Length: 402
Image (cartoon, rainbow, N blue to C red; front, side, top):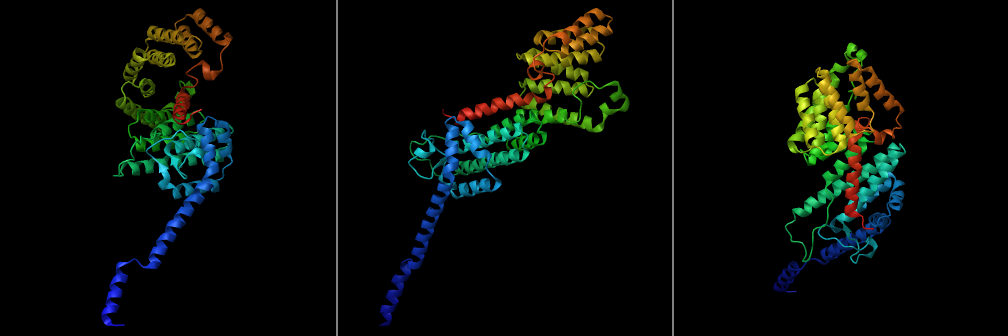
């Protein structure tokens, strides 16, 4: 072959991709497609449970995931990672997962539902005091929350425009989930877990007033008694234990931040008032508690504020005002017992033994409801619990379509 012909052939060859490179590229594409199809097929049983949850069949869905092992949950996230590019962040279909026309498509709302499905399973384990199950299911829920949050952030930074006719997919804010779960965990005495979830939520929303109150409630309860110290406690200096007072000061700081973030947050004012009273700052405590009584329309909040204010006034020697405050507490929640006993104590100190005896007799003989529904003071340390369950219900309504 002549030299010129050889050069021409080499030039043409350099202008075309090598056959082996084209083949490798096609093989990689096919390999990726096979991996995605295999991942999708492995996820179908799990996504079927998610579809059941979204349709309102929560019992079947949670029963299906309660048996998940650590290995199977690890495999779940491995398969989700393979399908990361298939997550539909910009539109929501009403079809069930099995009815979608585009194979391998997962929506944000599906994973939001999966988060709540695992959360419900975790609460079921809590009811049976199965801590390993709780840790496994809450861990899966939290990892899903963070998985979706990161990919949603990536999508929001994507300069490409969404497809025509696309509408934003409803997204369960990670902070809302951390708020709900941390509140709910308090009711099960899972204080360490509640604190961890609340602190993670605060990393995402540093001045969220509800999370500040959750952490303040934990600090307030700490090692401190929820009732007045006994004479023996005072004698031994337990009430003034440095660790107890550190907890109360931490609670004060958190409640103060919550009030600053949301001045209308009555619960924060209520708890701040009580903590200030325990820190021997009665004038500041009185101002906070009176603010609650002025602003709140909730009978339980007013009951507690009047109860705490009565104690502050009693300690200051304002016995008549204290009695009036305890009477207001009784008027707010007539079925409650604690305010009657407090008023009886005041009356007995004033020599009104007949009135005190009548109140005590009524407190003893009256048919009281179960303590959870009877007296807000008895469940004061658990008050976030009911709000957490309500918040979880609100999140479920975003994803469940019976």
